[in-house]
Image (cartoon, rainbow, N blue to C red; front, side, top):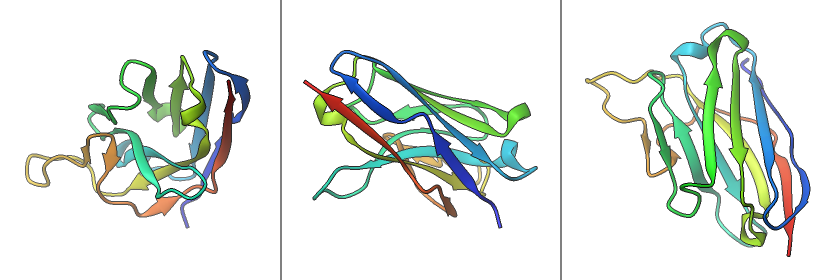
Length: 131
């Protein structure tokens, strides 16, 4: 069973930065499309950012220009650099994995920051931004 383990969450003041890390226990990580989701209390889970197996990235409008998703295939690790954090970014952040790699046949696997297919979820890491 593939496991996703997030870390890096915490409490920061508005305008601050955090970097989330997701370590994935699979040797096939480079073939996976990956994404970050978040869920605030009383709200639905939403896609924040995604990166496909080719390295193409996509972001939700609410985080464009502030968040950067990246991956290190040699370390089986996904990252989310979050800058200029706002109180509305407060949420539980989840790492997600899609086993289907991008190809011209499958088409985009990430749209508007949302990973379209999720096979595995992490347990989440809390991000709290105070004003």
